Length: 343
Image (tube, rainbow, N blue to C red):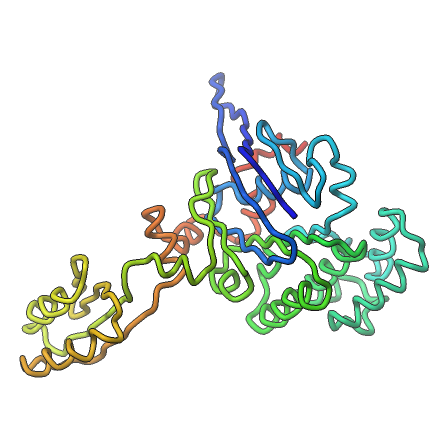
């Protein structure tokens, strides 16, 4: 459904009289099969939204090739646009118009008959729990309702491939969970392929069949979430020692079953242990025999953030935290697309 080879996007930035070339996307190769839900992860400025803009024909690649829904994104851009649905983070509905009118206008831009758009639109309103809101203005809708309206507009042409750019940003936990169900249904009920960019790790983990991680303009990993997490060396074991005088001894015992050095932070000792479920009972017996009292012990399975940390040397959560204020600022342009490039 999507194939890209050597996809590159460069921009010229100016600092006074000096011009600098920035490679926002640096030779991306990716494949998405029909019917897949693929999560596209990366910190702000990594190139994820720039890649998305190229795949949706909104930004011409500097180099490389890409086909989407069987069409070339450069030479057959109109056919690509007719074949896909695209839900941007910013949303596409005018807040001062009635929701139904926005859906009608959007569908008719695809050349669909008015009666067809109305039938499809009202059916989608029912499927996405927007019943009774056909005549309501988006400005009077909740955040979750507006995002579902955006998805209706993205599906009105019945695309086989849907691009969702940060679909749940700004939603409360309940609205996010509800929208997750609707995203799952895009494939289960409609057979759609979904390409999802997100900075929520749990969202990518729950929804995606496969994860692509981009960093500094390059794909650094592509696999299922479980396989990626399995690459991280061991489970994280955290021990909180009851007394300061036993911290050094507890750290030594934990180190004996760790593949890497342990970390000590006050009375908290942590380290990665291969197959912690098997190793921890023996560790607890050794600690008990040594007369070391613990306040707590916790075992954490590897996460997607651990995967990102192992691949890039930095935490995806930390990278997002330093750039998200709020997240919407990133994802209008992903922090890697200069404003002049979209004019």
